[in-house]
Length: 294
Image (tube, rainbow, N blue to C red; front, side, top):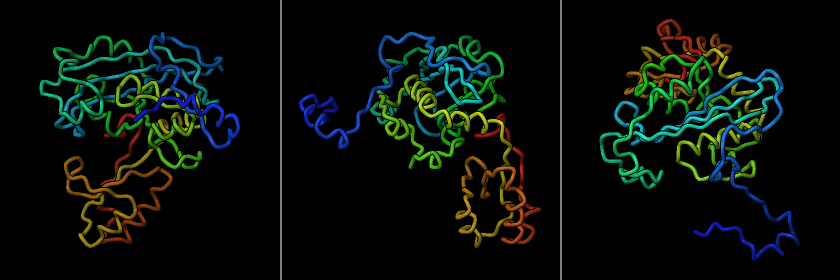
């Protein structure tokens, strides 16, 4: 597929610009870019966020391995949502000790030769993640499990998620997929490489300050994980329809959901009405940013 810009259609574009949309390669993903890069003036309340992305041999943190880790540190203003600086970027390969599945190489372009003998530099990672800043991923429910299994010394960090932590539909987007969000913002990038995906999240934060505000607030929010212990088989459709999920490998043979703190009384009432003593039999555990996404 030829994605080159159609220079032969410049006359068409000029004559009817409303019929066309221009997409730009995310500037900070272009070859030769050096960090730090100042994006906007400081407001004075900036905090640091470390954007993390992993490429892996598969989807199971229990059985699969990391093959690439990207980490991009940014500074953002919680009050304005403005990303003011991309501070640094780190990218590392790791040999998983097994052949990389062909489908993963096809998706990412990462080959066995590229990772052979490579190991994550734990010292460099510790330096990059010094302090108690927020770690952000676009799918933290995926990345956190892999990250903490491989690097248990970083367990208990503060995490946020730009996929789950932002009300993208309320902001006018029909999907929360990273590539779509950036396309709608006028940008494209070559995805499925850890450092580029991190920079894509950073650029999305720059394009959408309201999303950045929501990310920061979501990290501070308290939630509850609810396991509907003792729920009979005949209520499974009601639980599924309310957002409960069945994942026995991860959570045991029980339906589970995560809710906001403000919705806890309503959820208890729902469970009480759904099955005998559903509210008191259920396992209800508080979650914060140190325990979420696991």
